[in-house]
Length: 431
Image (cartoon, rainbow, N blue to C red; front, side, top):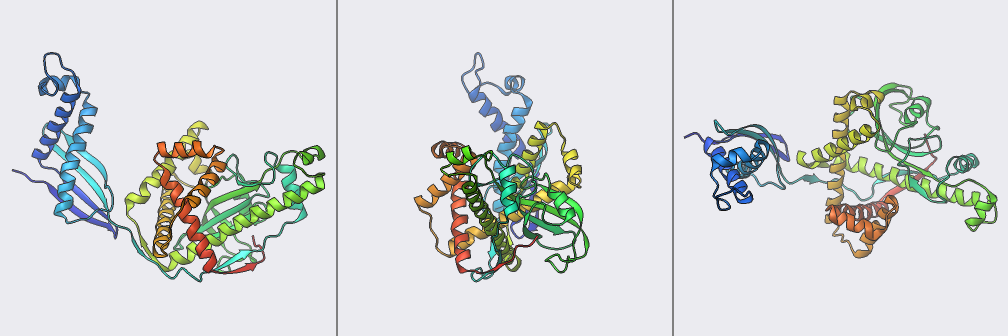
């Protein structure tokens, strides 16, 4: 009698891959359970529920459905046995990839990535150093905003319905080829960086990436890049602007201001608020850079791979609506499909590791969430999605995504703590 064969491979400190060749008995048992499950659900004339013979069910049950059910049964039984034999303690459900499944002759082969608990060895995270650009607003910035942005009054908001334009505030990450780490992050005004970067940023949307060569000016703030031409990946992390309706005295009066002059004052205040928010994002990126550079953080593949897959699926759906292919999209951004997928996988891996670090700090500092923390995030999210808070909450419950609300509250609490403990120096704004 042949037995199950298991080959073990340590993919990384938090992921174990098991290649499993099931025994014929396990496969036969799995298909048997699948037939019994269908027999209980199907009405077969002349037979009580669950008693119809296999020969009749074979003609009635679609092969794909039968094989899917049998695969679930076989994996459930054989994977648990393999994990027990290998003395593995999974931190979550493994991800499974079926490579072979046949009823006759009985055969099943699959691989499973088994996640272990994330490994987090944090460096010192209090007393971090960061530079915060001084927030200044020139008259021409106010004029550009008044002329360009129409829809909303006085509020800064993330841009989600168009690409970057001159005057937008952008948090940009640049990763030079051959350099380790997650790149370097800058807060910039689109149209006020340097020619090649400005051209690249124009039309980009938040979270979009491009691969191109950049000729950094000699005056560039990163001295080891200054004056050099480097092949880089440019990622637009965040994009923000201030939106206002047409500028008239009549409109100004509707906003409880006496005239356009008063309204300009409000616009300037809004731009200041937008820059303050983006400046805070920039500081937070510096916090992450310092913490991640000196910490040891490993996460299982099963944590970040689904994140990357969801994002790539979202991109493909968006492109489908635009009647464009993923190949066209990659080419437009100076990338191949393979390099695009690799880039998004890198981003997903990075963001998941950051999330694990945030939760670790939250736990180490003994922080707790209360209803006020959660309500604040719910109101912010409702404003972002243009929904009533109650409607959004019900939708999140239905989609089982309440954890997103919780994590946003945790993230804010940890970041407030890091800001409070950090040494932040104000500097002149740089491109």
